[in-house]
Structures are given as C-alpha cells and as structure tokens.
Length: 395
Ligand code: FEO
Image (tube, rainbow, N blue to C red; front, side, top):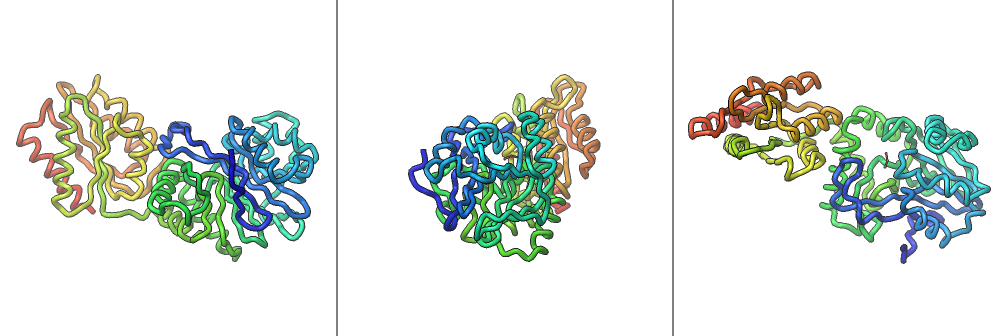
C-alpha cells in the first residue's frame, strides 16, 4: 500500500508498485527485489504511462484511484509489452473505458499477440510524434531492442522528464523513489547488475540510442525508468555509466568463474588467482553453485580477462559451466580474453568442450588451456600460478 504520494513534478506522479519478494526475474537473481513503475500525468487530459505486473494490479488500481477516477483517464501509453509492464493493461483498459491506447507499431502487434484482437484498436506512434495533454506534451522516441523490438521512450517535453521504460532501470525494492534518497553505491551496483543481465548484448544499440537522444538536444532533468529508482539528482550519472558499459570499458581485472567436485578445480582456481594477483592485477573468484550466473556475469562486465574452470564429468564440462557459458554467449560480453582450465580423472574433456563452446560463440580464446589430472600436487599448483601470471601479463 502506498502511504505517501510520490510526485516527480507538478501533475506527474508515480503510481507503480514495489515487489519486495521477487528473487528470480526469469533466471536473473534479484537479491534486492524490484519495482514496476507506472506514472500518471494529469493536466487538461490524463495519461497513464505503462502499467505493472498483473499480480500487483489491485495496488496499481488503488494508486491511480487516489489521484483520479478511471473514467477521467484519456490516454494509456504502452512503452513496452513485456509482461512485467503490460500484464495489467487488459484490466486497466477495461476500467479506463474512455481511454485511447498508444504504442509503437511493434507494440501494437505484441499487444494483440499477448492479449487478443481487441488490441487492434491501439493507435501507433513513431519517433517525433507528440500528444498534447494540456500544458504538457508527450513526445515519443522509438527504442527498438531496449529491451524488445516494441520498446519506446516517452519524453515529457515541458517537465524535461524521460520515461525510458527498461533502460536505466535497476531491480531494487525500496521505500524511497529517488536517487538522492538511497545509498549511491547500492544504486550503481544494482544498475550495473541490471545492465549486465538485461542490456549487455544490446551495447551497440544503446550507444547509438543515447547519441540519438543527445542529438535531439532535449534537456533531461529527470529519468524515470520502469524499474527501481528515479534519477533526479544527477541523471547524467546513469547516462555516462551506460556509455562506459556499452563502450566495453574495463578495469585491470581478471574474473575466475569455476565449479568443483572434489576441490581439485577449486585448488587450481586459487593458485591461478595467486598468480594473477602477483602481477598487481585485481582478481575475483566466483564459484558457481554458490553464486548464480547473474552474479558471475556482473563480474565479467568490467573484467579484461575471464578464466573459466571446470572439473570433468562424463567427458564434458560440469553442467553449471555449461549453463554459465550458455548465459554468457547470449549476453555477448565484448572485448574479453577468455582462458580455460580444469581437472580430470582419466579421459578429460572439460577444457576441450569449454574451448569449443567459446570459439563457437566467437570469444577471443587464450590457448592452450590448463588441465590437471586428479588432485594438483605442488608442481601442478606452480603451473597454475604460472598460468595466472601469464594471463595477467596479457593485460
Ligand atoms: Fe521490464 Fe523488458 O521488461
């Protein structure tokens, strides 16, 4: 239940919901929950921008009702059809029976595909189109693939507020709504996790879209995404972070992602880490089965080198490594050097199968990989340290 009205600017209110409990967002582990943000614009006309996940529809209805009655809603703007934002649209469209609905052309098609032919009445908008709601103007900017082909941004011209839906969001449940009210470190950490797990494969599009918005010369005083905190203190902070991340900015850092059965690969990972650290390079170890893929990929974001270690199970890599490499392949981290190591008992196969998978994905692979039979002895651990030293020297 909302207890405090959240006003961005006069006539612009947050009517979203906080999902304190979600820990699995289609496979992305959301340790700090999330929010589904919707916004109500009230002027001579009333416009609702986006809705929320339908399990929270009652709360959205209540928040809107605190500000207006549904028969006064003139426009419903659907910036993105993924169900965390649109699954309350059928209910809201029924309640707001006078409202015209607007989406991009692909948004209209996706609404029909999700919710049926009655959404054939959706009106389509494209980049540069405007809708006047009184003294306020909504301007639309198509943003395909940020996050789906249908995605678009809505810009409140007079209030200088950008509503970019998924872009610039974070999965962060809090009772606060603005960047100046929360711990900045937590906010940027969640923004980086969100970028890594959702937007990383779209890096070239992000760079181009930000350049396009900058070229429009539209002032942005506030960025109000559809997840998490609203950027009002320093909206350029998240724009610059996105430009850095999408440009592939890295630190002198090696991340070692591994799993282990009887600790041989664990011993190798630690010795390799010592070798990396001996060269003054930052190193992070992430053991799968203790940490989810979403955490591992976040560590990959700013690393120059990714080392992946696996024990051999039935002549293959261990299943958690297969899962991680599948996840990483889809997210397409750019500009990394990938190295592989692991242990085996008799036939081997883990390192070979990981290298094959990485090459197929187009990753830049450091060869040869390093394999140790059964339990590493002191000589083996020295080889691991040397492997780490050599990798660190590549940075
Ligand atoms: Fe938050 Fe692509 O949905």
